[in-house]
Amino acid sequence: MSNFVEPNTYELSDFHGNLHVAFYVHQTTLPGSGRGHRVTYLDKTTSKEFLGDAVHIATTHIGRVVTVMIRQTLESGSTSFTFLLPRVNLLVEGSNRAPIETEGITTTHRLSPMPALNRGQRDVYSVMPLVGTASRSIVSTPPPAQRVSTPAPEVTRTPLPPSAFPRRK
Image (cartoon, rainbow, N blue to C red; front, side):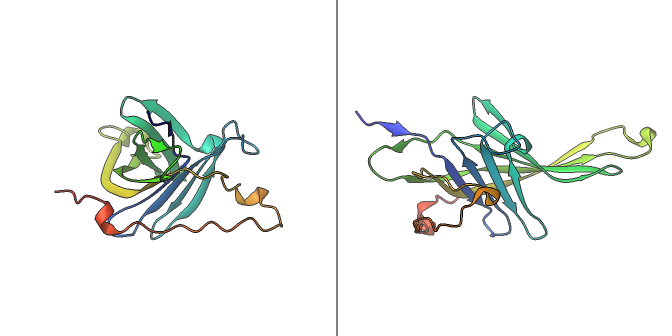
């Protein structure tokens, strides 16, 4: 019988390469937060990193649902990005990566400074397919604020060929 381990790194992007998101599970609590998780988000106009309590995670029957707030204003609302993390088993001894495909949801949360205009649908969703890899690394990379000056061993990642991802119809 095979022993399995869960991934601690998920790297995802849309089919066009316009959006990249990564989720890192840290074994220790990050400074200034109650949890040890990190999300990096990069699209055409935004590059952000979210640590600890800024990463909202819900475990459900369909996997983990991870949400971060990518834009927020007091007068016009906010925009959040949510992605689904499917359950993935990796072999303890064997490949430490697996191709995955999932969904990302950009939600615009409408808000008007005039209360009378805050009626009707206030959340608008844009769903996009995401592909990438789930992997298990022995040592997770600390957030930038904790990086030490001594060089860490170099880890090379070989990109998976496009044939590793089944095409959606």
